Image (cartoon, rainbow, N blue to C red; front, top):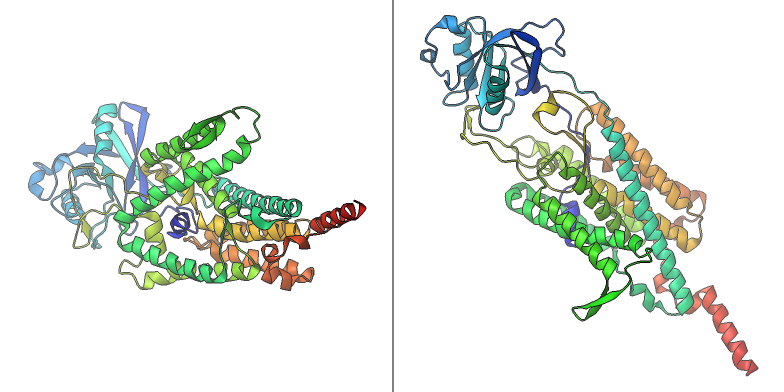
Length: 535
């Protein structure tokens, strides 16, 4: 249940981080060597400043370094001629961005760069119409790097290249999601087939308990959604503490899931089968080393989880195993349970994404707030960001419940942060439970996997529709809004066409059948009787 709670702590629909017009590029070149250029990240307010898309036919300004001055009064500039018709850079703090910009414009500056030692974000404030110069926030260590690499005799300009609507990382996310659903559903069906064979050959239902499963009945499905709602609200209000609980649960659950997935493959290797005693049990050498590797993978991710450049690879490996194992472990006994669970979670997603912005003070949805984590906000003074600390803020913790793939494009956002395309585990596991049920039903009824194949195709179509909705609406979309109708309608149509709707709705619960009801057991019993009569 801990892994399930972690799963639904947030269902981050398919949220591709779309860049707004608040991230741009500071382009710099050295006066005596125009070929020597560098680019740095800047943040700006699109309501204050309009930046060009490219460097074509763009004007450059000589940069004047006024740091460490704050420019909160004209006394910080001894002579107005020093900054006239130039771009200037000053330190952040003591007064608002608007006050700094008004002083700079009065003294004749044509561009204002504000260097910050804290996290940089889009500037806010009530800008007057008379204020016309561009205003941008830049990291102070970028300014230091600029002076060290290019010197102080440089020209600068600002621009903001557009972000393409389509990125190839979306293809990778699509493949990860579809492969997870297919593998989990296939594994669940194969486990069902093995159990049926065991019952048929042994004549006893005791072997059914050999493999642990968690069955979600209609009642437990309703309770599951209620717990998810409570957990999401608690995460919203107590994120700074509960995020570490979720990270801990993910580390343990993903390590166990990775071991469960890989042990099924390692068992096929004909080496390392020797055993050694441990805690009154005998453990195979190969499984022991596999367990160490799985734990090590989880621990390494836990320690370096904020290293965006490569930690996402480990998170995706652990996430794939987590999703596949959960799809195989959680069982929906019938289509009725599937409809109840997915229907309620669809309402849950829509409510927390689209309705809660009208309730929260920030105007942001609870789902988005929890999924992205608290913003690295600095102090605010009358709507204008001012310096809160001289130290750089540490990266805030994120919930490890999403598949992450770096976006494969160039734009200002690449300089400012590592942008990711993301898909929540819930958007993989929850429809995957329906696909797994379809495969088990195929196995139980010998349906030649028609339900499994059709539901897997429906899931892929639902993902494509989600991409389309995201591209058209340019905003976060709850993926279940598209995945649930696609998968449920597809399964319903197949069941109606095959005239198996009643059986599909109620499930083919072989667990309640007497083992002697199976044909193989009846044949074995008949043979035993013949042998007994012959004797």
